[in-house]
Image (tube, rainbow, N blue to C red; front, top):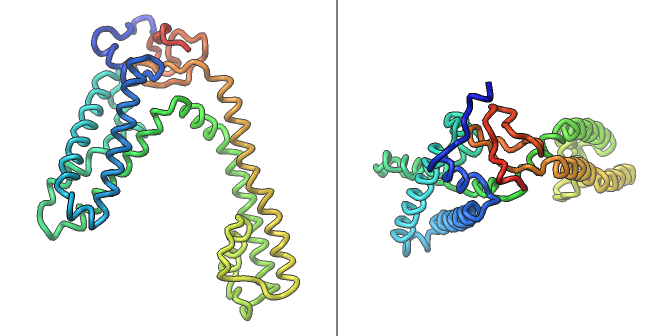
Length: 279
């Protein structure tokens, strides 16, 4: 029934191209403005947490905070207006992030009393979620996301193998070193194995016996090799994803961008794609 779906026309089509398409001049300009606004707003949130700055320039930061809140509110409303499936976008990852970027400021109006000051401070911390909005303005962000999605099974198996390894190595170290050398339990010995295997090396616990130090040296060497494994998995999937995904036009109805190069309609909702924006 895809033939009954008409392409988006009028001002909503133009608005969709500006907001969701990063490969047009208008879309690039919109993204630049949003990126700058997000960075500045996050810096303001950080400065607001510094007592000396807040006590001197608090009222200025307050006005700036409301300026950016209103700006992002308008952006959020426009996104809902120009997308076909409004509910799908509202409950998507980026839709929720967009809402979290503006919600705390409005919620703070509901708690004007001094006894709720701590609650307000906690709500204001949620404004830092604005930095996550930057992800969707990076041109190849979708390729990276797809690479992680394609890698998650392999990485899960790899992490499970690492967990088994640190359990075994931690248990061996508990047997070798014992409580007298700081390895008071198997969980604490596993903690030491994780710290050593990841090459963090806090130094709060260290083996004292020759056998224990030899085992620690082996774990350190294994750690260097293990670090490269997930990086290689993601790199391969990233290369595959980059080669397969050259069609970056977002669907005007559901906003999905994972389409084949020769696709005429969205494979998720059936809407016609804007072929003029093909890379």
